[in-house]
Length: 419
Ligand code: B12
Image (cartoon, rainbow, N blue to C red; front, side, top):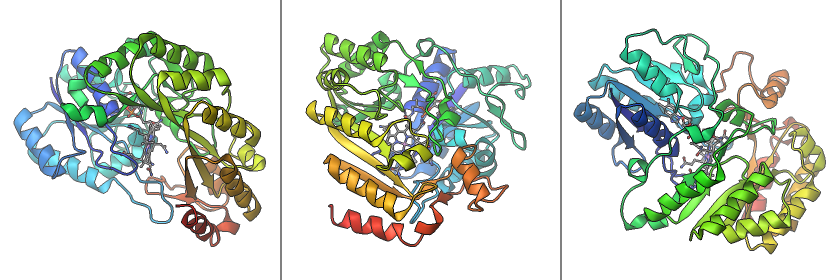
């Protein structure tokens, strides 16, 4: 089949993200014998025309639309990012009868409601490398698709997802599919992924809806070969998009050791769960090229850490932060304020704690985006913050009732005095 995959993300907030997810699906779809075109709308001056033109020229028999972001998660002035995606779906429809299939991280959190809102024909929740080619095969043979795992059809609940156990079974996308060519490659931050899934169950987090709870991995040797190939293609800077780069720690150490042995001249950034960090790991990461870590500690109050179901204490955050500092790795901290049980005192404790770490950068968020099927959603429902049948697709936030008027101003003042 001729298959058009559209990466609908045009969001440049934080940094423009290269389309690793849709490219991974494209690679698997090519491997299954289809003719694939991947269109990244990120840098298109007119996204709708670009989508329409691609459909007219390529005449796809199936169109996949990747939906990465739903909103920007900013409570004070939330931006709902789906209206332009709905226009892309409509633009494709206006010039083609091919079925339109949704997928992507954001889509996977809201499979039924996003499908309804965007007006596509069906969606796939979770990873697409196995499910999308399986769907195409059934569609090509004119067979019924309703029994497929991970599939979501209009008006029906999404089917249970199936996860690939061994990520080495999945093809990796070649640079030609998703990384702009030319000398500028050396300046890009290229996302790479060594593991999927997170078992940590933070009360507010959507990751298990996207990647599942069990950690699945690529072999370190394969990740290093992938990095080397990207390096040969001119890429030097990488983001490990794994939710928890240091889980399990033995894997993280092996991966770093192999990057060092291979002599790759790369720099990278990674997301760290502030537990299970020791000097050996921090030093290996530094020698492998790590220049920055995201430390998602979210709070400096042990009571609030417990309420978020974080498994670490503020003392462990301190220790991890110090080890990275000693290894010459910049630390970007994250505070997520306003959780159930948060008070003015715990907020002040967190702000003072963040100051004490002398981080290179800090991101402070007031109000927590509520995702479906999370403990936070259940608390919000019990407290009447979210309505019983609310699908939560349009941004909805939790902020402890007693802080509603005070916290935004307090955070604004804190930020203003720390440019
Ligand atoms: C790493 C990361 C970042 C990094 C990105 C670095 C980079 N260079 O890419 C940084 C920190 C910069 C970042 C920023 C933001 N992020 Co972010 N990010 C992630 C994270 C942890 C991983 C994303 C990733 O790359 N995954 C790896 C790829 C391989 O997986 P994938 O894209 O999901 O694709 C798979 C499937 O979804 C599916 N699939 C994908 N496309 C398609 C298409 C079809 C047709 C099919 C069938 C299947 C399919 O198959 C793929 C392969 O298995 C996710 C959480 C998560 N666990 O997913 C959040 C996440 C995507 N981010 C999110 C958000 C909100 C943002 C920001 C808007 C935050 C902000 N306010 O700044 C920005 C936007 C950035 C941008 N330009 O788009 C949200 C999106 C949900 C929402 N509320 O909108 C997520 C889900 C986190 C969350 N809170 O739940 N992010």
